[in-house]
Image (cartoon, rainbow, N blue to C red; front, side, top):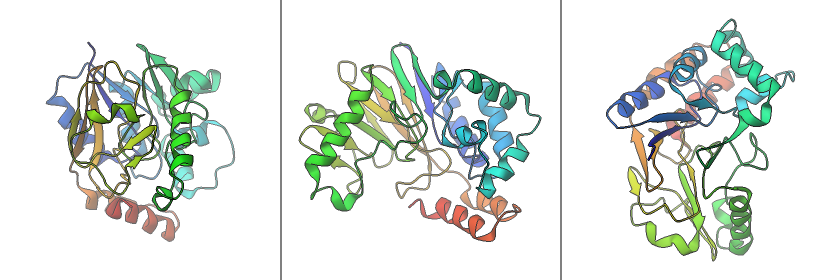
Length: 278
């Protein structure tokens, strides 16, 4: 049985990536899979890409990679700066070439009987698998429940993995509620008549997955959005998934961003995202 380390939304955060990889070294992992958005938002796109391209079984195209690869005129100052940093990097150039020739394969992949996608099967780089704003959880419970069920129906394999929201998640049918007995994020977790959008709080291991339809977001390495600024990744095999939070030097990343020659308001915004984690 293969054990995977699942990483997503690194966002050029070298300090967070290195801290996570140090943690992974302590564990018995067979393969590392990266669900996209290695770059964008952070100060070390070149360094992060070089590391990930050497260790990952495969890297999916995320929203930020897709913006660059598509050839559209970039309006985001940070992405324009990122493109300059990636110039003449062989592993990046090879990735771009593969994506341009087979974008579908690079943005979503079925591997070992499991689906891996950056965003959602129906829109692989842009859609957010998310119930909606928390203020609607009770008022529009049935509608949000149907929305989550439709996301699950998009996956053609029993287990699937997605990123993009920067929030660690287990999405499954309500009938599987008995697998959840750990700490849960009471603000972001959604319960409907047919679905559960479970957001873990801290480090949690969830067992007995093998005979269930389960869809997992490993959380974000470089820019968490669940009010926990620590990096988040998961260790998974067919029977269990473990969400792991890792401390890193947030201030060091902020100091790097503050020195980038882009719009001051953008720099402040990116620094705030790291500190506040929404």
